[in-house]
Amino acid sequence: MRLVAPRRIALIGLPGAGKTVVGRCLAAHLGINFLDLDELIVQNCAMSVAEIFELEGEAGFRKHESRILYTTNATAPSEGLVLACGGGTVLEATNRAVLKAGYEVVYLRVDASVAEARIAETTGRPLLNNNTISQLLVQRSVLYEETASIVLDASGTIDDVVELILSE
Image (cartoon, rainbow, N blue to C red; front, side, top):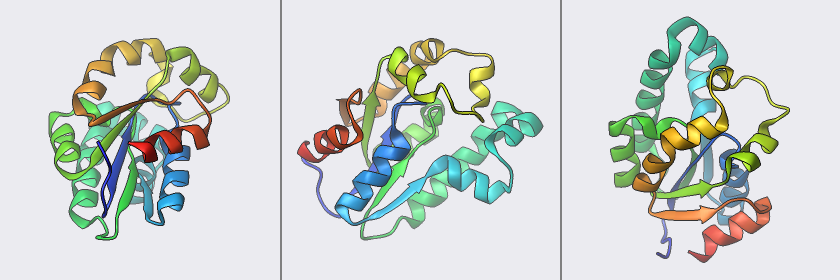
């Protein structure tokens, strides 16, 4: 499937799949805007993701995520957008519908071991306090596959993954 202009591309996948870093690089390469859904939630709520989880739980965070996703979709720039979604954005059926209707959805698929190695030094990922990447992969892989219009192996370098997306 060839991506066509104006491009509206949403990147989905596990924490550590590379959605943000690949998204920034891809948007720069295409000369279009980049947004990170988790960053938008943090800005909108004036709290970190961890603080939102602590105060409102996962359900509260997911409500913010759905609202921001819907708003972003409705106001996306006409010249195009690369949107890096949070790892759990696909958990809500309404989010999956918004993504499928508004974007070319690219699933950056990685093995749990690759994702774990990439996020080993990061903090602020509250779902990983009680889950492993392997558990998240089991819970979400079907939803990632179902939502995506393009599924790519994202185990390579950032440049390799961007080139894979551009070649679709």
